[in-house]
Image 1 (cartoon, rainbow over the protein chains, first blue to last red):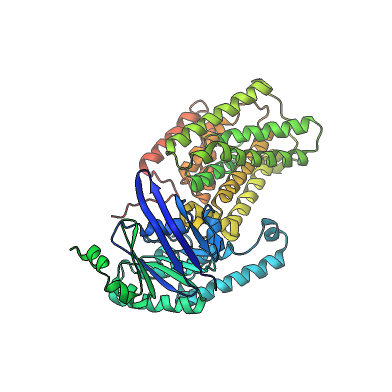
Image 2 (cartoon, rainbow over the protein chains, first blue to last red; image 1 turned 45 degrees about the horizontal axis):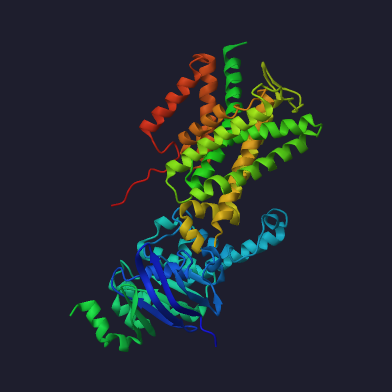
Length: 253
Length: 294
């Protein structure tokens, strides 16, 4: 079976700085994968390359065997990589439902003409989209907030809405950038359950960046550790926890 | 004529020029919302629309074809302008964009002077409907048609932005283009669409304006353009209802100042209103106060 994501020798230069160097990643279908490392290790840079925000200087990224390096960000999103952000970037002046509808819309093949001329078909499509949005929201128990403005949601729910919005693009691979940032232990616990539920219900692979070690070690099946843009270690949570290099990087000598 | 019916006449004048300002202001505000750019060449699109329709009319085409050709060519022109002049500067500083916009404005005005000379050209008013008589007040067809068309277009635009996929995409891009792109929205197409719609509205404004205020000349767009920019600023730049409100508000001030104070002081009073607004409520009537969260 083809891997969801196959990253080989990925690297990027910012001027004279080699931000990421020689990264290899293999994500299997349905896998929960963790990307960890100290601040400034290049984790978010990796996400930006995977989603087409940055163009890698070298290396390849294959999504189900298809090279996506050089594709535009919106094309990659449509091909099946969705993400959330470290700092929440919802469309705050749109309603909760509209946030989800926007990502659903990009999956539908529509033209302005169908919208304006073929009224019945347009309506049917709109209703189907509405139902789909509500179904996604209800997975996270957000259905009662559907008509609120996104900015009026409490912090924890905003983070969840970002995940729902990302799921709206029907991704094959979901990238979560520090999903537990700013959450208390109870919220983090709920988030771990949610991430597992998402993986099972939507049958997708998940790659997450996280500083909360309890979360990473608790749910990830495989972990890659980055340090100064290079791969320090790769393995199961148990292997990572006992890896000498990792301990050195995190705790000092 | 009694004082009251004179007031009504001035009120109608205000609605007329106000609806033209509102149409132009919509283009300013939409483009600002999505590209964070004050497109100073927007006023000149009115002039392009007026000239294209005039050429069509003089070539003997029926008025509706002249209108359609004028609207489509302005839309295309708006898209081309964005692709060639503004898109390469998308990551440049705002001031570079602003200077480019002013440059395009001069380019258009001078190019049209070169082609059509600076001499005013008579514009054949083609709105041939009977005037409306209500009591002592007579409203010419130009006036009520301008008002009706403007209001209809504003309603359609509002529905488009609120209800359609593309409208939602436009709102998303205006809030956060980066995030919108990562949700699969084609940001470039969305920006092109915005320029196309804004320029189409300007073309309509140009045609209606020329019908009311013949003759036309290559710099005819600059003053209404600046006034509409003031209107957009008054209403809150980036806000669609704000642009409409600002347009009518400004038109009304103009009409009343002309009638009751002095038509020579007109422009200085209008600009004073803008200055006061910027001092007292910089975000405009419906603009959002941006508070920096610490």
